[in-house]
Image 1 (tube, rainbow, N blue to C red):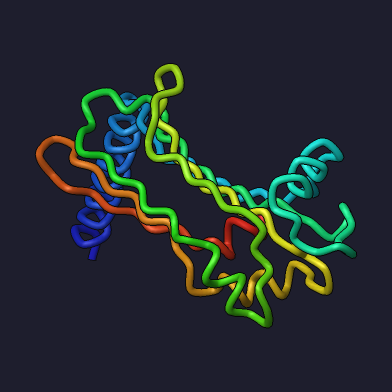
Image 2: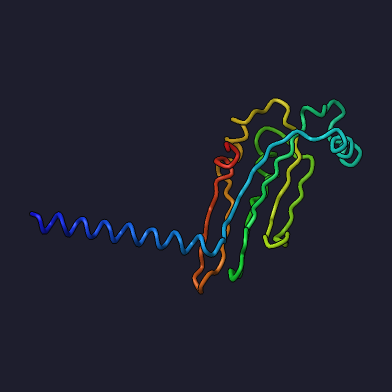
Length: 167
């Protein structure tokens, strides 16, 4: 039995060393995908601009309007190529809940910001009568999909909008 115990110890040690080596290799490249979802109230200036441009409803108050911003930052892309970021269209989900709630929507395809790549989508909408639990229900099937080619291999990651909204 001693040989078996020694073999297991050697195997576990080798596995730990391999995992450590792999983690150091991935840290060396510095490449990372950072998705973010923020739900904020609009500023007074933003609300005035929204009212002037879109005139959503006469009784709409600033407290009833929210901005949902979905951003994906790809840090230090280096030798990574063919980066694709697919942020879901948010308007059909919010408008399909109980009534037309969207006020405006804006998306930004992948662009450079310093050494990073950034893509985003903004949704300004009528939040009256909603809470975060409602938004989690509304966006439960929405995912951000990111793919890229690194060392000749296509890599894909998917992020739940709901999980990001929780953080």
